[in-house]
Image (cartoon, rainbow, N blue to C red):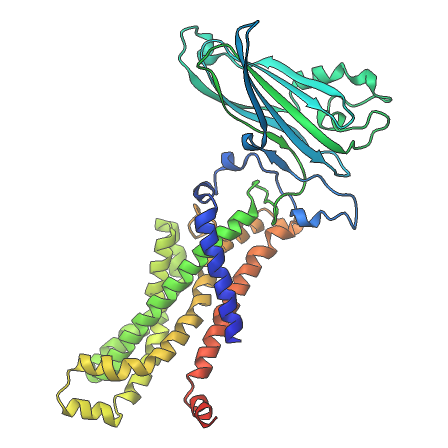
Length: 455
């Protein structure tokens, strides 16, 4: 069981290292920024559910960026303009139509706005020009305007796309619905069904100034499935939230567990060894902290001052050491009466040296076990606060994800991928440290140690 717990912990540690080193930090900082996730689908199921065994294959939400495009930059000597052209190829092999499509772009230009042309080459060889229009004038049409960046999107619902597609209605053997370009563009000519194959989106920017440039352009084909863990109702990639929740959970769990266990050992050993009035006074303080209604206090502090992750750690440490201190005190009361401790006193050793050399080493195995047991408690405490909406709202945590799923009625809507992964991660992490703690306690049991020596 101990090896199983260690294996799970190593996997969680590897996930944390991968997240910190490979996942963009912007996704952590912008977790609650709607503009950052606008390119993603809302409430999309995980991609691995799209196997097609139990029904038609749903379209996967596809985001094609500039790096995946075939780019060509050239000058039209006849008209004296620069042309920046991008070709995005994607294989559409699904049984239903995309939900929409859009072309986000970012262009820097001056007084004369560039012209954008969008053509789509279908698998049957037909080439549809779906968009041809100039960008909005810069600085309200001021001819003396400086170069500035303009970012916008061309949606499939744009009236210019509908108007341009209307001229291709005659090549269909039926009457296509031009009001839904995402269906007409991806339909077969002979009957209304999905035309599977490779689609090429060709986007050309006609620039009228040598300083004009295209900063970014993407093609997004909307789908109902996306990523390894899908998305939530706020369009956020849940896989990223689960990944970032791992180092956050380990940081909270380990820091709180180590701090509370060390404080409990020092406090309990000092009280038990000193005895007398010192012990009495320290235990009354201990009783005060044990009797505090921790959850109510955390709720009041959160409502009054708000909580970030560091405040949560400090408060969990402040209210979490008292129980372990009483246990350490009872053990210190026994150990201080051992003969080698009495002999050290008679030899004139200081109290600090006796505690450090003779008492603390006896309690270290139990302290390590206490640390392992305290980690799940700290993680569950943070998850509970997050589920109640009292934790740091700016960072993704497993409890926070569950809180938002509950607020959005994810269970009622059948969005199971929004509920099961964070709950499973909390359970697996808790199980890992519970197995490690149980194994450490088992191995440090005096009776168990005697049995091992016999073998």
